[in-house]
Image 1 (cartoon, rainbow, N blue to C red):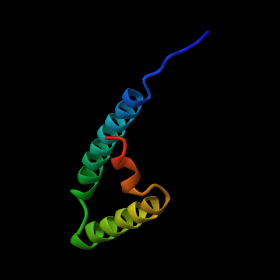
Image 2: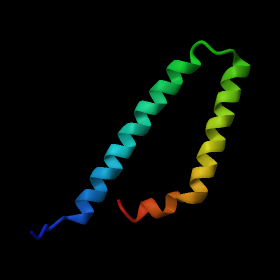
Image 3: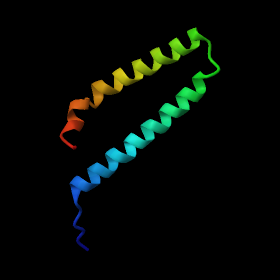
Length: 68
């Protein structure tokens, strides 16, 4: 059976899903940070920035620009 896929639409759907998941994660992190001390929030932000930098080296954002 042959399947004709619209790859551009599939990529756009994946980007939309990923974006929504990112927003959900942002809400989760903000809710987590509500009870933290200023030092705890700074530590959390530093860890998040470190994780973002590590992922950026694997999947650079510039590659995503060609999808949109």
